[in-house]
Amino acid sequence: MSAAPGVGNDRDFIQSIERGFAVLLAFDADLPTPTLAELATRTGFSRPAVRRILLTLQKLGYVASQGSRWSLTPRVLTIGQHYAATHGIVEVAQPHLMRIAERTGESASLAQLDGSDVVYVARVHVRRVLSLNVDVGTRLPVHATSMGRVLAAYADSAIVDRIVDAGLPRLTEWTVTDPVEFRDRLHDVRRAGYAIVDSELEDGFLSAAVPVRDAIGDVVAALAYSTARGRQSVRDLEATVIPVLLEVAGDIASDLSTLPARSQRLRIEGRDGFF
Amino acid sequence: MSAAPGVGNDRDFIQSIERGFAVLLAFDADLPTPTLAELATRTGFSRPAVRRILLTLQKLGYVASQGSRWSLTPRVLTIGQHYAATHGIVEVAQPHLMRIAERTGESASLAQLDGSDVVYVARVHVRRVLSLNVDVGTRLPVHATSMGRVLAAYADSAIVDRIVDAGLPRLTEWTVTDPVEFRDRLHDVRRAGYAIVDSELEDGFLSAAVPVRDAIGDVVAALAYSTARGRQSVRDLEATVIPVLLEVAGDIASDLSTLPARSQRLRIEGRDGFF
DNA sequence: TGCGCAATGTACGCACAGCGTACACGGAGG
DNA sequence: CCTCCGTGTACGCTGTGCGTACATTGCGCA
Picture 1 (cartoon, rainbow over the protein chains, first blue to last red):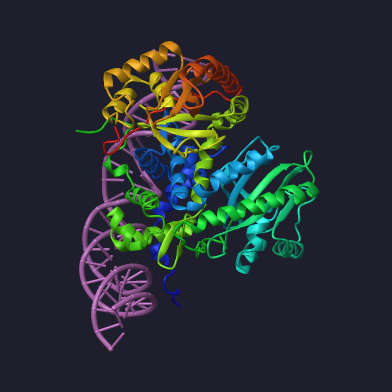
Picture 2: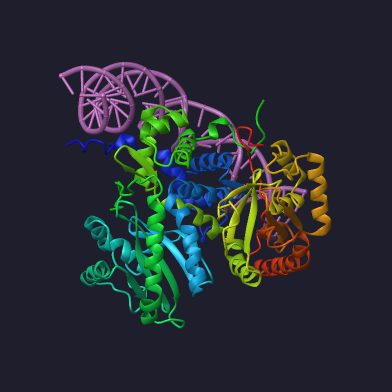
């Protein structure tokens, strides 16, 4: 009848915090400078509630008002800085990503798993790749990216199950959408030690990724190289890029081991069908 | 006795939201993976309160626990994405920044004002500049950076007053710390149309910035180029870099004018001595 | 100029969300 | 085995934050 210890029960959830984030995240491309009423409609909260939240966020410096229109301030960008500051791998990897970009002339990225998405945590962008405007903080689906394949391949089976349960939507005509085939690909990745994905996320987008390990040997991130199919072939990547990635991933791991080694395997509690 | 209309009174502030952010931002380089008790000490909240907040943030996906240690998840990086999505200038400027980087071989950045700080909102990093690890979201002081000088030069006098009141700390032996001299420099910037700052933030760090205007002509951001003094002189920048920056700033302004033009001048309400 | 619609601002009293105190528990280290 | 440091839980009260209802403002239009 009672929940497992340490999990927290219903009283251990603060509605106002959830609402604060809901309002903050209601600002997006569809609603860049909403009015109070628009935010109330979008979030489903009463107008006075939204007003209180907005005034609070304004005093904290995250939103600003211009007449009856509200917008985010650059301060929201600062929040992400705390992630980089607390995860040594981001800073450690930065110069290595630049090295890849310099040696290859293409973009290099570092990503980690968050829920059923891949999130870029560091990136050196040489040029814009196709229609994708990828930057730190960008979320991409696991199943159609080389980084996602690598991260899933070395993740707990429960995480893979969650990803599969979330669905493997078809994004291009080459997207792997069959769960069985997807798991086969993960097996391939584990055997080969790298992943190459061609045009499964977007037509013409070609990327390769390898795992990055910490001092304990756990896979804590994926290191990737991305280009356009017009410029290189899968064979090119296998021959010239994968060795570079593997070498750099080893360098990053080596740099990481000089940091206070703390394991990165975390218990994440889902909510509201997050699992 | 009563506050001005539209400002919101004391009852229009939601303590829990403030506390939520306080806990989230308590994760930093000094405390990358704190325990509940450490967060309680750092924030001054009671342990049960911190526990409720952490469990809430965990359910929202922003923090994760590993044993008794807590850490931020990559999801916090996603918050910043909403800023880029709602401020067209970020996306518009990206290819232009790359052009600068390609033409000059050095880093290019776009920044905006937030309170008494400059915040990087877009950046193309070619190589690490000295000890500064600058990325999107990084906050730097206004008075010692070329971008800050440009933004302050075209800002309302009230904002300049606030910056001066916040103090102009000495960061290197060349930092301008005298309010009168600082205001003189801003005057110079308005006259010249650009700012160059040499070693006032960090010894050997050399940068140049120009204003970026929207369709109405308001200055909405600063565009900057940064290098090391060993590689170029102030004279080099004036001769070769400033013309490029001015040209690109014009291109960005032109691209901006094709977007739905909404003014960017916002009313920001401070709190707790924020002003 | 005046009306009227569509916004936001304000007042207010109730409910319960969230608070802290106090205590139980559990594991690592001596 | 005991101690200590840490988290988990219970619980009752406070007062925060809630929504309804009503002013008020401002803009568009005839």
